[in-house]
Image 1 (cartoon, rainbow, N blue to C red):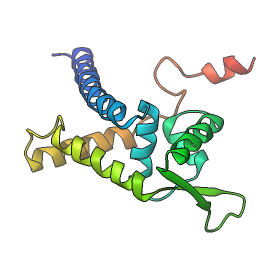
Image 2 (image 1 turned 90 degrees about the horizontal axis):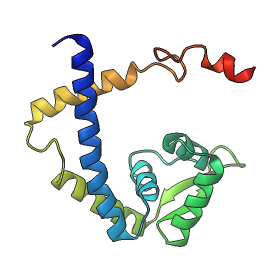
Image 3 (image 1 turned 45 degrees about the vertical axis):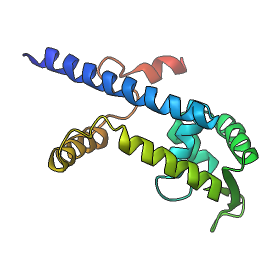
Image 4 (image 1 turned 180 degrees about the vertical axis):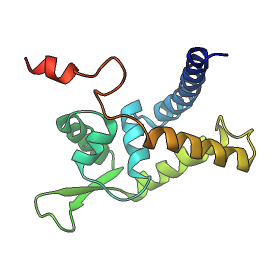
Length: 157
């Protein structure tokens, strides 16, 4: 298999995994009365430090106003709350409420039980994780991918 074919196969694998995972999460989100994006937001909020609406928008790759509207809906459902930022008086931090944490726990349990990686042993999952981290951490900044370089200059003209 040459490099081009190998890269195509890798993309095929990634698309297949994405389709499987999205299907599983879409069903779970629908059962919880959430949109896919709301479920994605809850997942990201549950994966570490609290964050601002701006940071959540960056992670979801959407406008800050879109993230704010979504946070409003999640807050209305009692899944998140806004609290003062510890160091920036102008900002608010988005936190999961106890109800949001319970839903997060359901999502984690579901993803664990339906993981496409479950049939791999722990060592294989660790190797795959390390390889995927290497790919993600070594990704090119936007606009520098092959065939896209220089696009930014053209857009400014």
